Image 1 (tube, helix red, strand yellow):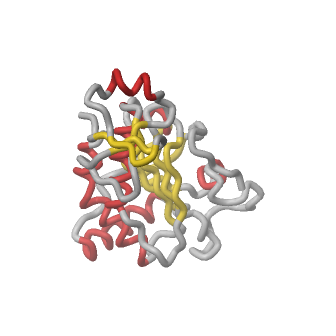
Image 2 (cartoon, helix red, strand yellow; image 1 turned 90 degrees about the vertical axis):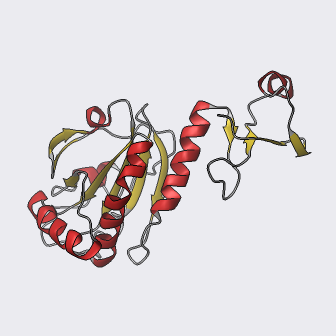
Amino acid sequence: MSAFTIGATAPDFEAETTEGRIKFHDWIGNGWALLFSHPKDFTPVCTTELGALARLKPEFDKRGVKLIGLSVDPVENHKLWAEDIRETQGAAPNYPIIGDTDLHVSKLYGMLPAETAGGAQGRTAADNATVRTVFIVGPDKKVKLALAYPMTTGRNFQELLRAIDSLQLTAKHRVATPADWQQGQDVIIAGSVSDEEAKSIYPNGWKAPKPYLRIVPQPK
């Protein structure tokens, strides 16, 4: 299984989705993308996740983040599952879902070992337990965040929105965000900025309980 490192280029691929065939990098375009994978269609936790993400899509749209799901089952199954999701969660997926029946994308992204034989048919959710990851990809097509979850723990999409707010802010300004940071709260001047440089960026100064911990209001 390949170790996925932050800052690595997200592998490009072509795949069938519920909204037609895509080439991943072209599909992302100049924006951000959130790729999230599922071990199998018609599984309980994933049903709640796909519905939650559908309801939250306007929040991701606002941030210029495209959503795409992945399951190793065929696209036809995804379309049937969408009806169950609509019925039980109040919203059906309003974003494409990849049908990774040959396991190509799952292997490419290190979610299944490269030597895994065969395709999706006959594989159980337990066989695909590791296909349960979130990747956030930036406009430069590099991986900005990767999170893997066990099958029994539903993902917290509010946390992913919070992380995206931080990623987008810190991509634009030379700052970092502290623990539990929320939009609008104080931030930390990045370690790569010298005190001399910081004086020109922050003429009003900063709070520094320690020389390496320089706190300023969130830049606009």
